[in-house]
Length: 419
Image 1: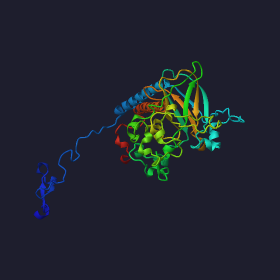
Image 2: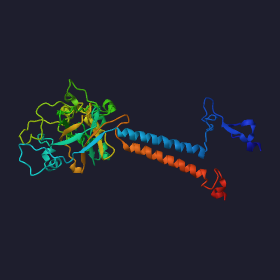
Image 3: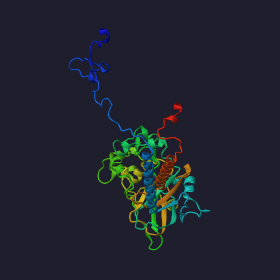
Image 4: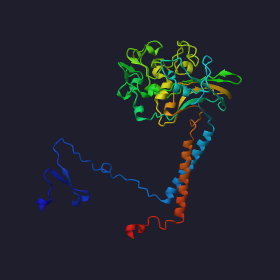
């Protein structure tokens, strides 16, 4: 009997509380200097800490439903009131009629820039800069006086969220950590021995329409726009950096040397020329018909209010932050002092084709307030959740108050296996 109850060799018996033999545990006898891996006998190590196990009753649940419902309804109502204070105007310019040069034969009828870009490849060829399509949009604006007004461009049916498109970029190249992009830039990684700077599909499709505005009623004057501050500060501080260069010209950087890198196929200029000041005669809608072939054109001239040079150009930074949905808007320009009420002509340099993918282009004017921009969806969500929660609480109260369940709380006799 002693042999049957003795512990195995190399182990010793540890009696439980009160010395009860039934609570005995075996503990291995370890060689000197070797620590046991057995967890300490404490409530924390043995997962025996006291725990709060609430029992959900109508008295405890009903206040939660009602409180959440009231809080969300109040929050949604505040957001709706705040949205009422936000002014927003939207203008579709996809099919705007092009300006006709006095030097060309009179067209048979109005022609849109969209049709012109589709029918004449010279207007989309980056090597024929003197072919430019421009259109003028006459609008009436009010409600923006004295308020900082943000101008956005909107695109429809443009899938920036396509998996291959999203991957086609090099963040290391954009922060000047390496000259050439990696394999993620495919299919636009390099051209022969020259690296595309910047590489990838996102950069190659950079939005390149231009915009200027002028007031047409008294007093007639151009409107001052700014492209500074449209990009996220964190992007400018960490994700987009120019390589070291001498003087004030990024084009002196080794990264942008024509023997090492080249511009993306759809760009009329190299990356170091983004945001530069106009030098020469600017190409316009008259240039091709006046035989003016020595003019220059850069959609990201500082004269078009584009801010930042090279990789730090804010138009580039904004575009590289891809949109999650096919219909989106992105910051374009800012009128810091607001836009006085009146009639305006918006002159658009129509360079970005949307007809091939069945898209549309818009110009949006919008103000902001303490809750940001106009977003009725969030307000609607708050109201919907609040109303559902409140209705659920009232329904739960009636259900328990009038005993519609035909049973008492905690009555196990109603369980199927107790019948």
